[in-house]
Amino acid sequence: MRRAELPTPCYIVDIAKLRSNLELLQQVERASGCHILLAQKAFSCFAVYPMIAEYISGTTASGLYEAKLGYEQFGKETHVFSPAYTVDEMTTLCKICDHISFNSFRQLEAHRAIWENANVSVGIRVNPECSTQGDHAIYDPCASGSRLGVPLKHFRPDLLSGVEGLHFHTLCEQNADALITTFAAFEKKFGQYLPRMKWLNLGGGHHITREDYDVDGLVQLIRRIRAQYGVAVYLEPGEAIALSAGYLDTTVMDIVENDISVLILDASAACHMPDVLEMPYRPPLQNAGKWGEKPYAYRLSSRTCLAGDVIGDYSFDHPVQIGDRLTFEDMAIYSMVKNNTFNGMPLPAIVLQHENGNCEIVKEFDYEDFKDRLS
Ligand SMILES: *Cc1c(COP(=O)(O)O)cnc(C)c1O
Image 1 (tube, rainbow, N blue to C red):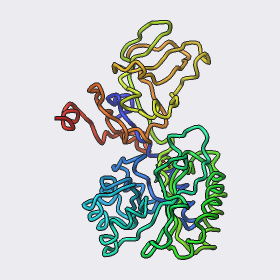
Image 2 (cartoon, rainbow, N blue to C red; image 1 turned 135 degrees about the horizontal axis):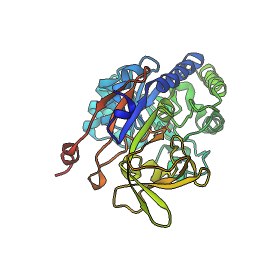
Image 3 (cartoon, helix red, strand yellow; image 1 turned 180 degrees about the horizontal axis):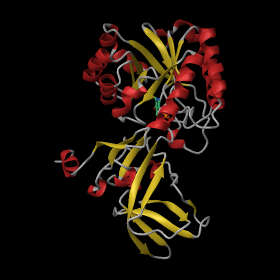
Image 4 (cartoon, rainbow, N blue to C red; image 1 turned 135 degrees about the vertical axis):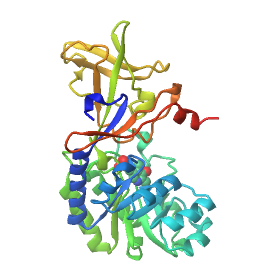
């Protein structure tokens, strides 16, 4: 199918761009000797898991369902971290996971009898209490009062029997300098426990596939950690796997006038790109500029009833017409994993755009999908 023939709204995964991201990540694995895992919470498009599995070591999960998906559809290594597990979840996770990370010593002990008798490597997530991100407190696990990771004052060396790994995750869309700073803070506090560990997981938030990322700085740091402490090093990026590797195509359904011209799209920020409202940010739109940059300016909005369901203000070289198709960029990550059917909005189809340009619809949704998760 050609791109212009696709039903809208639809998420389109750009296979060529995904492959170029994966080639870089594979180079990082090879040059540094680390293991890279796909953090499925950012991107769970399992239609492309076999392709991703050709390049990186496995998946990580935020709980049982993602762990199952990675185990079934990806294969290779399956890791999981969650702040809390039920007994039933732990029993299943111990059968399908290679690594399980705990968020507290209480959880570690609560499940000890299960994991000690299973073939699984367990770790504890620590909190290095080193904030390196300014603007997005909602994404800062080192903020005061955080529930994520054990801070040094609550660390229990007396309970480390059987624990083989340490985990920290503190970054979001950051470069290698932030990791180097964070590792130094971690090392000062928890470095003394590394020699008895088998592995160290550096979490996600590494924007490795962004153009200005210091790949060499990352590789040097990992090589140093491996040489000095003799541990296996894991990275679990989500964003970096599919960064800029997807689109959300939408159709203009109406144009309404108030003080400004507002486009009514068949896509919604609230339903189909919730990070636009949550983060918040203005997503890149193909062939469009900032407000005032080009002659024809519009506010892009949706057909939900939420007044604030506004995607952003943009400008164009030509007047926009009803029926025009618009393309939001960087829509592979944190989009299809977070969407919802608020207002009964239809869910976007999921499409693979192959390297020859051919588009393949891998999933379509309808009224039954809306109805099936309600009662
Ligand atoms: C969110 C998260 C990731 C992935 O983060 P990205 O910012 O998408 O790279 C990895 N590990 C943990 C524990 C996370 O919470």
